[in-house]
Length: 112
Length: 115
Image 1 (cartoon, rainbow over the protein chains, first blue to last red):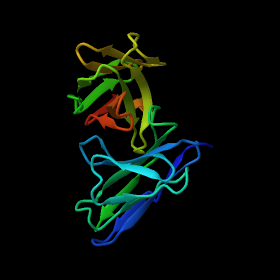
Image 2: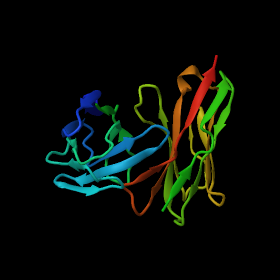
Image 3: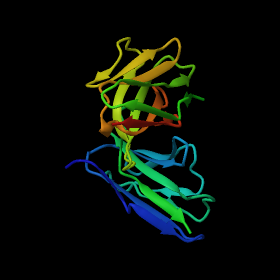
Image 4: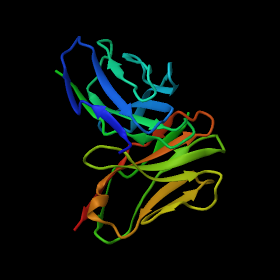
């Protein structure tokens, strides 16, 4: 089945640690995105990538990093510099940025 | 900057009835796209319906339809014959035709279906 997978579903991190969230898609989409969702708020764009080996900052990129070495993979690292990382993280992809975005199931990150 | 406002934090509807969720947006652009996404308890965002601003005809997908009023910058979602599986958070989203990578979301409306 074609789709977007995210792992793990739940992730716990101690303060001061970096963690990496996985996002994989087999839809052959060129564009991929990371969003953050906090309670009572809509989604906010962290990073996006339009093509392999290229990515751009979104509205809230501070404390996060990404890579795009393969078309199907767009991992997100939450670094210790992110002051309030506890949130729900959603990955999305689209054929190109002008096309509709489709979302993965999300990862819930909790900092202990 | 564009903003999207959903003024109804919560709505409820009797099963089989019709409900309308409201969304307004602010933009100075003339060409853009609007979306409704559904987020059920599983929390995966699912596309419900999409509307292109240059199209006057309102989009429809089975029991879901929109009322797009461009001059009023209003984009409401109507759900007909509500079903228990429609219970979810519903998010309205805006995407510019210029800055195409960014979806701007509203804060969502929680829809409860009463059996």
